[in-house]
Image 1 (cartoon, helix red, strand yellow):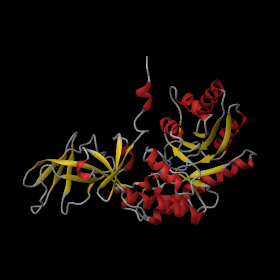
Image 2 (cartoon, rainbow, N blue to C red):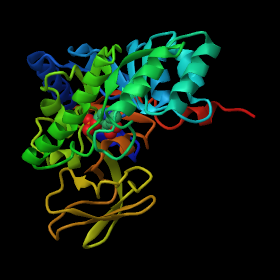
Image 3 (cartoon, helix red, strand yellow):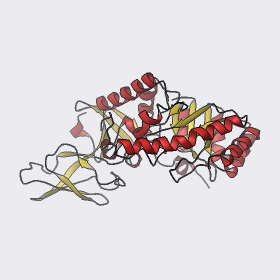
Image 4 (cartoon, protein in one colour):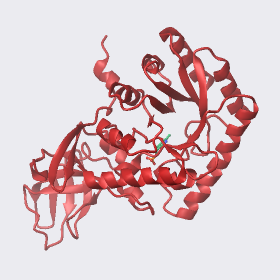
Length: 363
Ligand SMILES: Cc1ncc(COP(=O)(O)O)c(C=O)c1O
């Protein structure tokens, strides 16, 4: 199968570029001594996670949803999983407890409610769940406040039957995307200046802190070099996006949305890659190969592309877009077409996409 035989719209992977990204991150882990825990949320695709884990330097995987954890365990990707999200809501803790016994699953908590719910689920399932105290390092998202609140939560976890205090985490998501390296470094340093003392206070309270985890693609070599950070959780680096491409990172854009030209007018063409195939939350996609072309707008099932007068683009042509943000784009598709030098070498299921409980629930 060739690229132009792929039914569109489709998500296409540039396999050699992806492999280079994987190698560069594994090389960083080897050189820095910081362990890697690639974030599965970015790709949700077992075939890619297998390659990341096989490249070396990895302690396991990071997940953001219970469904991702279930897929990681069912597919046998790893037994060492950190779920960097608050697992609150009907059925979530019970699903974690169900798979916890099949691996070393560690879940982020930032509330007493979360601790009690996980403990109840662990007790009912007759298992033990690892817990990581999630500290607010400035993102204004989740995370318990550092200092006494973090220590108190860690103590509660440690003293609660069914739970095991595994470590401390804090995600500096407000730093990772800053294009200016100095600004990114300053923000990440400030964030870790909150996380590392918070972890130390938990230790000084006599509680076990197995590891301290933080970091994303934009800060992998900043946070990942800090004394006391044991592992980093980058996800986007493996396929990248045009938002991250604006930073000074050594990773290449390795995925695109492939469409077909369905209309041609003198100044523009229209593709079948609308908002249902290409997310635009970080801005419109870029154009991979057509010189002088630009995206005007996307609607539900269409992308309108402005073309220069010299353009030879014709109805029926394949046309590739480079998305601005990896995660929401991956989540829109069922499979990835893995392409090497124009040849499709694999069709990889995006097994952890969507909300699998919606496909399984019955009244
Ligand atoms: C908790 C957490 N850790 C790590 C990451 C990975 O970040 P990136 O995609 O920038 O590598 C994210 C991404 O949003 C995240 O939410």
